[in-house]
Length: 459
Image 1 (cartoon, rainbow, N blue to C red):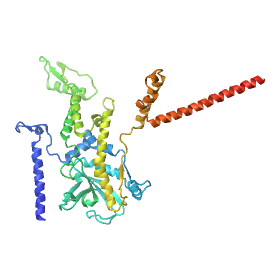
Image 2 (image 1 turned 180 degrees about the vertical axis):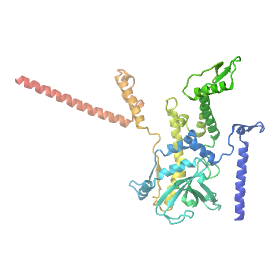
Image 3 (image 1 turned 90 degrees about the vertical axis):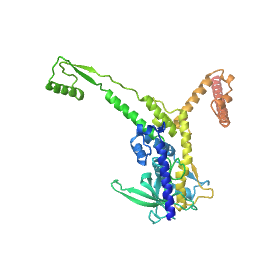
């Protein structure tokens, strides 16, 4: 035990030393004579508090953390088995979804895990044991509660190399706050009651990469640009004035105090004139520069690092919505994230844990399937826009007298309207049916006219 503890301490010390050396090299150039990080005030070794502060107070930082989570969970998945009828597993899962609002808590732990290196989701069971004891079986899920990295400290690790959880957390210390957040107490928790979530992993499965880490410097630059521009416009919006005293004019202390009062009332009050004697006023030059160029460069770098298209990151630009290319790129990224992270690292581990503890019945031999709604399916508005365009194109084609000679109708429907052969056959059947109905109407009208003619002859 003593040797194991010593190895653990040595390993942690080596990791800390390695990170310290890496942080010390950041921003160094010209043989360490130039230190960009020190000159610009960048943080070399940011902690969780640095990321959390950015998330809570900086608009773009919050958007970067929230955007992939909201896009991933916007359309909820469906959990099914392969059988045609509803199974006991599917019924039980629907009950858990309805009573415990599972997707809500899964999306929350997905969000807070991206602020720091990880987040955890505490599962409360009715097994009758304490939270720090291993849960073996339970009959129902009582609650779910997410914790961020700073409120879920890893206490012990699994050190047995023959254990399947080797190198993973064994116990946690959870900081639980009261409802009014006035008091906090620590609760030890066993890993069997915890769903550990970490994204963008490197060497281990426990500590991921905060979503703001790679762009932390750019976020500070953006804050300086936006805050500096606001200060610049605040100062430049009201021009400065220079008061020049005539050398031949003698002003005593009382006159200068009266002048100060006049100036203060002019600046801060509603008075729009100043009474001056022997003093001339000159406007000081105002220098205001547009921050737009600097803002665009920083946003471009942030978009490149996060993979979030710029127009999706900041919303509409000059009244224009995100381009179709941006939308496609973003949907592909979200689709990849749903499968590789949300499903494999959050959703399935939660469902599997509930199955292992008998909270959910065991599914069939082929297991269960997670079906995600199609992100690329056109919306109602998009469908309406496409229908309008096709209708206008078809009307132009039909009204052109020589169009059918140049492009046959069947070819036009296949290549330009993207209709399948089955849809074209249905159109032909409808046309034949309409033709028959029109012929029947013509025959009926002819018979009616004949009958009218016979009646006229008899008269």
